[in-house]
Length: 150
Length: 197
Image (spheres, each protein chain N blue to C red):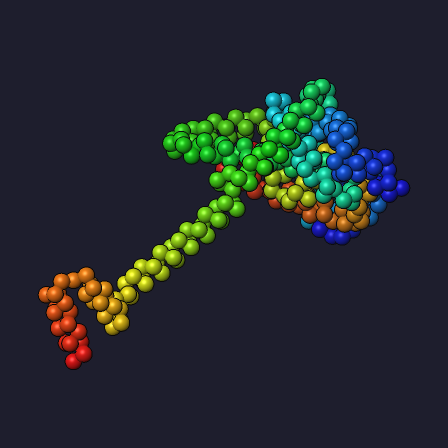
């Protein structure tokens, strides 16, 4: 649409006075005329939403009391909402705890499977058993130790 | 005079500082206006008070954010219109959830009965025309909706809107023009759609 029409469109729609140039432009420009007609038709529909004071319900004398109660209810919900299990903060804490547990668990499992593979640990294990073992076991341990040294 | 220094500006300042009596005065001053705006859009008497309560609850909690860039009534108007469209959107979602529990045949039957009755009654039913307008307004931005409503529903002139919204008159004209173009496009799309209104 041409600028000249855009500038005066609101006055035209409000049925206020517009410049003679506006009408002469519409008469000579079918594109602008068609667009102005479509806009006027659709804009006119908005009048459907105009309030009708005579049919509109009126607030009861207790309306403010109800609003105040609604506000208190919202405040209470907000306070409890912080502690609710579904609250985002607590969900994040729970998720972080799970991640920490999973990490710690996998670390412990790895450590467990690693332990006992190095020489010092094998020997220490044998020594610990040796203290409580009887003489025949002690011989077996000595044989193991001798074979290890070879 | 600067709006902030008017008696209403002082009332807002008191409400912002936590003065309950000031907030009560604001509610009592604008409750009828809010009821009438909601009824104009929703047209369901039973829901008007619930939505109005939500509106004033929102006003209470966002009162501190009111920055005097527009007048209080314009700000309340904006919140009220947004709340109405939120309500209509939620209602539509609820309807979709309800329909998702139906069989395809049941959904088709409901849609056919709705579209048939709406098409037939659009010419003479104010309710159907209102639904159509609401559908058009759902397709523009919140700001465009507010401008269109202030102009076409509340009947403000461009000068009054510029004054209330603290905007240049030409800016208002251009924004309104774009919003109206979007409405026309939305209307053409709705009219082409198989289920109208």
